[in-house]
Amino acid sequence: MKRLLPIPALFSAVLLCACSNEPAHLDGPGPDAAATGGAAGMGALPASAQAEAALDHPVEDVPPATAPPGTVMPEPRPAEDNAEGAGFNGYGDILFGTELDRVRELWDGELEGDAAGDEACFQLFPAGQTMSELALMFVDGRFVRYSSESTSAVAPGGARPGMSLDEVKTLYGDGVQPVPHKYVEGAWYLRVPSAEGEGVLVLETDAEDTVVGWRVGVPPAVDYVEGCG
Image (cartoon, rainbow, N blue to C red; front, side, top):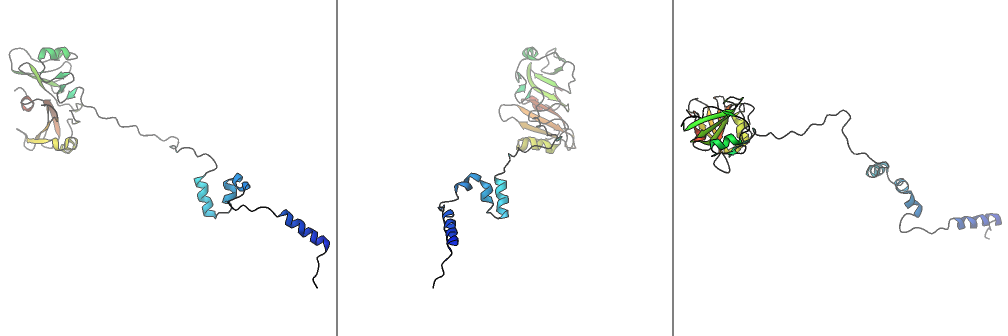
């Protein structure tokens, strides 16, 4: 004989089934889970997965990376300029081949030196400077070359007195044509022809392969070893 439940117990069971009879969400999490976002969903993940998800989706805004207070940021290194006006085709606006009178008109200031007489070759230099700082050579009344022995004077391409032979080769690469010095054993004339035009840079070194001076001009004047001597 079957045992019947008491009426109060049977009534409680019916009420319990009615309260729990909700439709199942087969296609994904219910609307409450979607509304709560990652907090509800992350609760079901392993601890390691929760940590990775927190890094990928931080709750707070992350500020951009900045240097610590007091950090001195390095300034961009400026490009090294050549000596003022130095170029393979002349000096500033004064091109090789320009006549003396026109050079004087274009030059900003006075040019000193002996240009009198019928000398085929002579050199002038800016007032207030010496010929070793900057000299302009003229042949048959035309500008053909300029030169300097100053350590502050930068030749076209970046070379200057005081540089080593290796530094010169780094600047000009295969363009350097070494020629043995006429008077100093172990010293060199380093010729660097222009890629365009007739201009040539000649760097002179001592026996220790250190640049002691340079000149830029057109042949044959640029190769005069004794200047106008």
